[in-house]
Image (cartoon, rainbow, N blue to C red; front, side, top):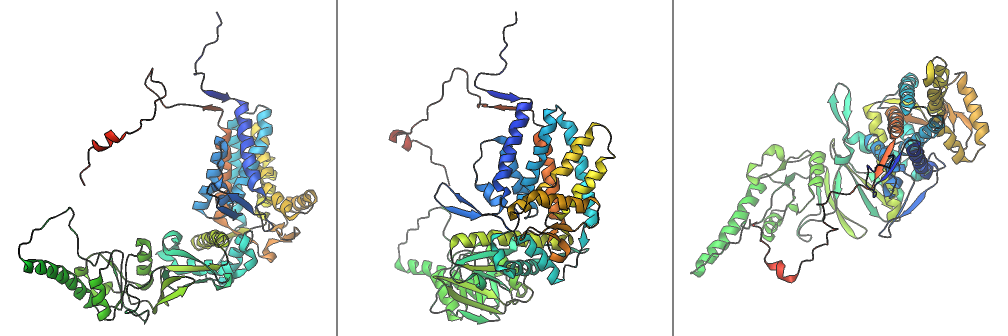
Length: 555
C-alpha cells in the first residue's frame, strides 16, 4: 500500500527545509570571510590568478569577488551584491558583503529554534527602516564647493585602499575629474557621468606622482603624416567628423569595362574631384585640426597638409565624444553640412607628445571642458590597474557627494550608533519579532568589529568600550581609528563616509539577507528537455563534402 512515490526524476537533487537554510548561510559566511580581511585601512591584499595566468592584486571587494568562480547558488547571489553596490555607489563593496554575511549568521540561531523565516525577515525590514531613520538623524550636510571637506571625505573612503600611501594624490585626481565633468541639471541637482566623460589612460613608466587630470583630453593617436603636419598648434580650431574622407567603394562588386584609355583617367579624376570637394568644404572653415572617426585617404591628407591642417583618423567614437565635450565642437556627419558653430574653439593647445613608446595627442587647456582624461603613470601594469580601480572608487565617492552632499561618520561609528539605537528600540517591540530585531541590531556591529580585528587590537575590550560609549548616547561620532585601532572621535580624525553609500549598503545587505532566508528549496540538476527516446545527441561533425553545399547568404 505505502510504496514510495517518485515525483522527481532520479537525476534531480532536491534539498529542502532547514538544510537549505544552513547551506545558504554557510555559503554566504564563506564569501564574507574571503573578503573580511580587506575592510579598513589596515587591510590585506588578495592575489588572484586567472586562467590565463594573469595576476590581479587588489583589495577592492568587488574586484576580488568578480574573479572568483563560485559553485554554490547562494554564494553567487552574494557576489551579485557587491557588483550592484559597485555600480550604484561605487564604494562600500566589502562592507555590504560583511554585513549581509553577519545578518545571515545571526539568523541561524533563530532558524534552529524553528522560527519562521518570514518572521525574521519582517523584523529585519523593520530594523532597516529604523536604521535609515538613524542615518538621517546623524547625517550632516556639507558644502560641495568646500574643497578641503570633500578632500577629507574622499581620502577617508580610499584610505582603505592600496593607494592610500600616496595620500592626497588619488583623492585630488578624483575630485578634479568629477568637478570638471559635472553638469548642472537645475534645481541644485548635478549629474556626473563618470563612464562617458572621464577616460583613464594608463601609461606604464614614470612615477605615480606624475599622474594628473588634463584640462582636456588625450588619445593614443598621431597625426596622419607626421613629417608634414604640425604637431603643436596653439588655440586650434577643431573640426570633428564622423565620415570617411576617402572615395566610397561600391556596396557590391562592380565591373566597369573601359574601351578608351581616356575614360580611365576620367574615372580617376572623378574620384579625385570628389575628395577635393570634401576637403574644400572643410577647409572653408579654416580649421587647424581635422579629426575623423573613419578613414582618410592619401589624397585628402595631401590637401590638408598643403593647407597646413593637421589631421587625425580612425578615432574611437567615445574619444570623439570626449573631444567634442572638451573643446565645444559638434561632431558632423557630412562635410557639406558644416557650420561655423560646429567648429570647436575651446581648446588652448593641440600637441602630440611621445610618452614611453607611443605617441599621444593632447587637446588641452580647454575653457570649461565638460570631459577630461586622467593620465596615470606608474612602474608596472598591475600597479596601474589597482590605482585605476581605486581611482574609480574615489571618483564614485566624489560623484556621490556632488549628488547628495550629506556625510555620516566612518570608522564603524555609524554602525555602532545604529546598533545602540536599535537595541533600545527593541525593548518596545512586542511579540516574537523582538528577538530577530535585536539580533539585527547586534549584526551591525560586524563592521566595527572587523575593523578592530584588522588592526590587531584586543577586539573584545575595544568593542565593549565602544558599546558602552554608544549605549548612553553621548557622542554618535565615536568609532575606531582604523590605523591605530584606538577609540577616537571621527569628527576630529576626519573619517567620513558618504550618506548614500551607507544607506545603500544597509539596504542591499538586509534585503539580500531576507531574500536568502526565504529560500527553502533547492532543486538542482534540471536538464533541458530532449525528445523522448533520443539519447544524448552526438555532436555533428561537418565533413568536407557538406562544406560546399551550405547556402551562401546574400550580403
